[in-house]
Each structure stands twice: as structure tokens, then as C-alpha cells.
Length: 179
Image 1: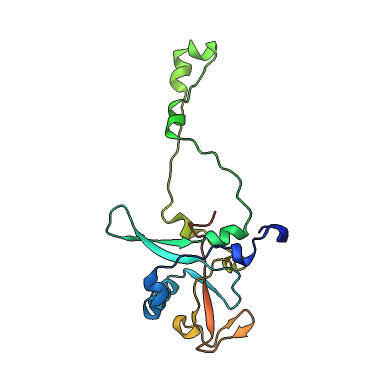
Image 2: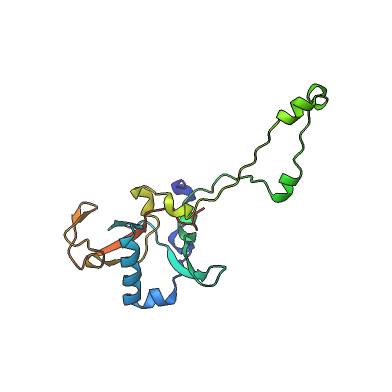
């Protein structure tokens, strides 16, 4: 988190964008939260620290949707991340290997050399990176009644929830929109 002196005032924080169908249709919103609850996507709190928005865009195949978390507000509350230098395709094309004369003039030494380059992708990588409960409270969705996600009678944040008590679903895994 940013030091208190660098924290933006409430009126300077971004208002997260919500898909209008979710924002204004309680049944659709509750159905989505229930579905994501069933696959273990959320932590829950009664003490949210920051809110996010949610909307959808088509994947490149235009046959499936990608869920996007608008975490700009949370990003304003955390320190800027350190820079990352990743090699580009052009950079890979410029790799040069120099050998000293003892290797360059020895065919057996040259044929024994190996050069390895790796590339990988982890399916649903961000969804596999779980965040601690203290951090997930900065990525809260709109509240739902405890009964919507089966939390009535359960204890959260030191409180036993009644069926209609509001509970905030929070990102249980790292949000793609979080820097």
C-alpha cells in the first residue's frame, strides 16, 4: 500500500465501471456471484476496503467472453510496481554467441554446445495466484445477501451472518487488472 501521505482522497479515486446488466439487474448479478462462488473464486468480508468493477469483452474467437476486473481504484491505493524488462522478438533475433578460438576451431567442441530457449504460458495464470484475505478486501464486488452464497449462520470478520446481512465477495485470486 501507499504511505498514508500519498493515498489519494476519496474524491480523487476512480469510480469502477460495472457492466450495466450486472449493476442494475440484481438477479443476474446474484446468479453470477453464485456461479463464481461455486468454483471458489471469492473470499468474503463485511469490511470492504476498496471496490472494483466487472465487465466482459469477447475473446478473440468471439465464441467466449473474458471477465475483466476494473481494478483502477485499487491500483490508486497501492504503490507503483517495479518495472519489468522483457525481451521482445527483435531482441531474440539479435542474440549473438561468441566463442574463443579454442572452441571455434574445434569441431568436436562446437558440436557439443547446446543452447536452450524456453517459452511457456500458464493457463488461467492470474486465477491460480491466490491472494491473502487482507489483500482481497481491496478488490470487493458489490455486496450480496449472505443467503445468496450460503453464508447465513457462518462467521465472517468476527460476526455471525444473518440471511439478509450484506457480504462483499472479494477476489480470492489475483485480478488481471491489478498492477
